Length: 85
Image (cartoon, rainbow, N blue to C red; front, top):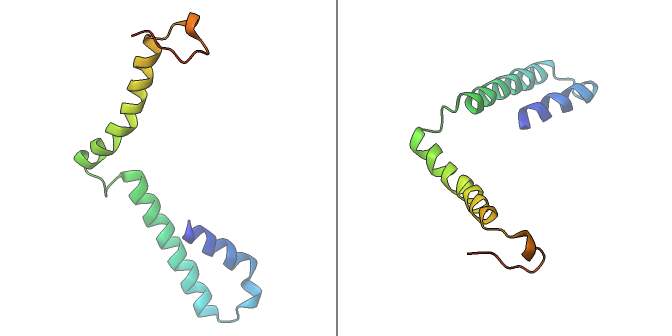
């Protein structure tokens, strides 16, 4: 996100900065940061299988709890806060 912001800011304020070498360095650095960040996010290179599974367990536990609660829901008790257990 910072790399994209640097590119946009440089594009809008290019006339304010007269140092051509610094502008090119910012442009190249931003492109490298953006491409490398995009690669790391898309490839999931920094996350191994165990870490990914540990992150997904709480995420899906909430979904499973909601599914279990819906199976025991009685429409006759709607609005009363009661569940059929």
